[in-house]
Image (cartoon, rainbow, N blue to C red; front, side, top):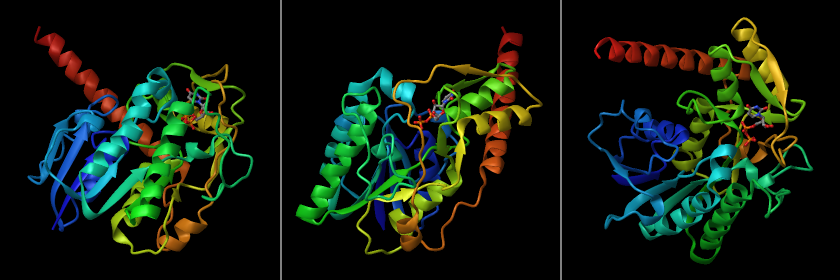
Length: 326
Ligand code: UDP
């Protein structure tokens, strides 16, 4: 039986990973550490499993005498406006967080880390294989996130090389789906919340920049297979994403159509906005040949829109109830 810790387990991706971990019968205890900076208690309030324990704490200062068989380190903001606002805290969560969590790993235990396709920066090759060294500006506005992911990878791969640490590092590409914060600020959730409230959709730049949008269920399924389901001799890191690359403008136009047409407005590009991003999935296909992204972006965006619609309806009803009782 295994004891497992997940940092950032109340976050968008982390909470989905908790749901997967609790399907395992060999997990005896699952501890979530989350400071609720970008995570939300509502993401985990459906979990009633007695094996599940929530600790509200910064990961880098977590106080515990427990040791764990498996640790998955997800604690970090992932949206540019959030990490750009608090760069020091972002670096601390990723890098110092990993250092603290390494102290809590049992000997022979497994350490999983969600790095990011941001390690490729604004890539000059497409698609990006894991061997591509990337194009990141270490003094640029995205660097707190990009470089802390890169440096945490360095820490883990050097521990793998020098001490044989069992390391599993994934590099996800633009994940979206249910449980994204309404105020997250990334493209898909912005477009959907704008469209559902009848506001214009904000496209930054000309919208011709592209991303490979991955629906959360597909991506977390890939994480689970690599982190604990499949045996592999591949040392990592591993790209996990949907390799269908779509422009930002196309996503905006699709969301607009889904709600019967809201206008699209063009706003200035954020600084150093990457022009393209697409995973080379050769290694993913080797490590988990049975895995593939099953949800097209058309389906995934429609599912996410329905989830936001329901959530906004429920929030409106509860605020009406509150004012009726006042
Ligand atoms: N974007 C946009 N409008 C928004 C939010 C984002 O046009 O309201 C663009 C952003 O400039 C980028 C792309 O969508 O080119 C993806 O941005 P996101 O913040 O979702 O993720 P990133 O890949 O930049 O981390």
